[in-house]
Length: 88
Image 1 (cartoon, rainbow, N blue to C red):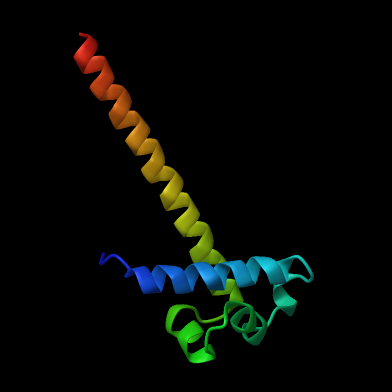
Image 2: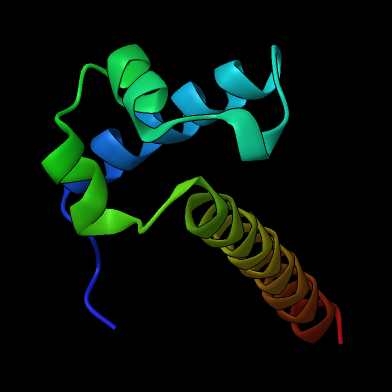
């Protein structure tokens, strides 16, 4: 899968922060795309190029967190294997 550009990553980060901020005040089913976009200072059309709605956004956000954790754990595992090989 193609890596997102720096701009796309920043936009998604701002949108995720907007979602999290909105979740402080109300449940997911009451959050609007407009609220998220207003916080992130992003157009709604940009939002819809990445997500279909706040439910889709939170699912994608959870997946990205899981992938990040998995990648970090794989890095730790690889580092440990390299250390063990050097010690043997």
